[in-house]
Length: 414
Ligand code: AMP
Image (cartoon, rainbow, N blue to C red; front, side):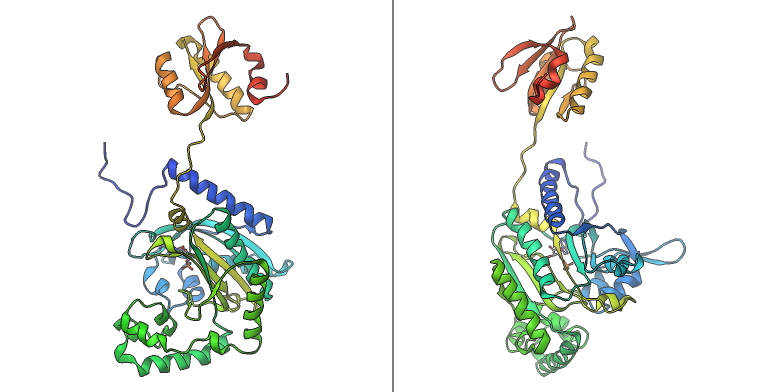
């Protein structure tokens, strides 16, 4: 019965058996966010294109080639959101959240869209969960958001996770550094890949990300910003490290760490998982002290992270077993269907999970079906109005008084 239609390239369906482990992950994340005071926020799936051009940065791969951009009927350019931070900063400004007690701590979860070449762990519609702490410049905020993600991965028991930590310094420090980096790249232009060579002046940091052998050779001797951090930038980085040390969070300092978005300042971090192959990053983020101002607000320090839900699930590679059902209501006679429905509803209202036959099966195949859906007990409604309770584990069966069923099945006292 296969249809000629398929989910679009780079997208996927979340089937019930996959939705279970996804649900567990989402509940774990929501609990961690809530315990640390990161309130949920939801923003639209699309925004004005200019928000991302401004917020994510015109020189980034995301804006240059990965956005799903379209015109609405009024001729406005809209884009399916490729990431969450720019939208949340837009919402922070639009709703005057700068007037609230700072920092404002927010969390989110939802679909994001990038026109990338699909492969394992890389999709065109994927899901991220993330947190943003807006209005705090303390290294405590950096450490806190890092620990939110560390906690989640720990709680879910994601294997083989490594936290990499770096710093890009402030904008001023970075500007001076980027000039030196560009000079280094220009001096070795002949050894660089075409892609990196063409972007020396647009986005030199991305050269650290290249897989090209020649480029990697050049980058091995490139200056790094971490080794030249000074003053408050150096202090900030040292404090973030000290806080992580004090909390027992393991990390490696990676001076070559870069991220695909323009807005980062100072702390950047990345959680990678060796089980994931080429797309090994589970999540990452950093500080973005210039972004709110860039979007028209007052200078406002902020830090956050985003993690890929599909990447976490791939790393976990486990299926949550089906939950089963507390009961299945079967009828020995079709005349009992009304009573079956009423009983199922009554039990459901008592928070029990209960199914009943919707397909007109014989009693024998209702019992088979009850077993298939994992029902622990079956209630068999007889033609004479009596009811049998069958324990599917032991096969034991006895008559019961339906008036006392809820108490009996919820373990309550009558
Ligand atoms: P970014 O917003 O680029 O910092 O990405 C944050 C996280 O989102 C990454 O670490 C990935 O886990 C996930 N991610 C980014 N792009 C994709 C994609 N195309 N498909 C699946 N997951 C992605």
